[in-house]
Length: 285
Image 1 (cartoon, rainbow, N blue to C red):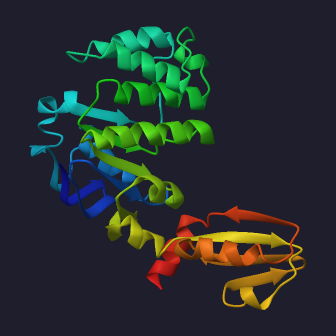
Image 2: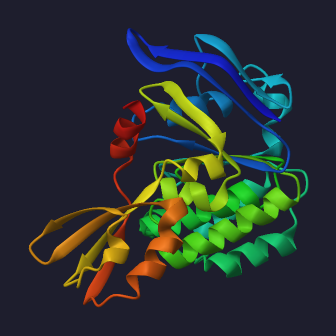
């Protein structure tokens, strides 16, 4: 179990986080979602032992972070938001170095991860692209099959195919009983992989709930070009400029909308996720 209760952190007079609360049980993925600067990384750095809180508790398996990190760190897998390992090390050298921190590394699983992720072993870390650096970070976080996974914006820099591979790996760890904190600023990503969510803004948790309840908040912006508008679309919220209709469709109504749309004539469509800040503004209203 990971449990955060009344957690506060200030940087001098500046607020980091204020009264943050959430709990993650065995075999559960919680999405910590919020815009950049909201307090996600501050929370994670306390849980991973890099920062001391001003008040409150951050517990991993009832060990108080960061003060008892040594009692539990071998069971933690962590992907930082910015990946900066040893630049002059070759990847294979780094993986050998990483093994030294754990009593037992399953070499077969390590090889499997290398193949699944397509990791280049003979390059120096500083020569890797952002996406390939993130692949190495994924491997080092998962290879010891940790009980607790703490993931800070883990898919930044990954192409869509590798993202899906990563989601599949995380789901397998969840099925094996891992407790997973998944930080993101992408609402659709949290919807896809998490069981529950905690929404943070300006250091404060503003809403929590199940992923099903999150779908009531989230929406898609659907741009339809050269549409021959029909009465079947009148029930949906939209704006029109020149030859483009822009529909705002809640995630839980997306299938119904698309079913109505395909009965009409149009040239092209484009589906976008609105900015998270816009969703927060609507939530506050």
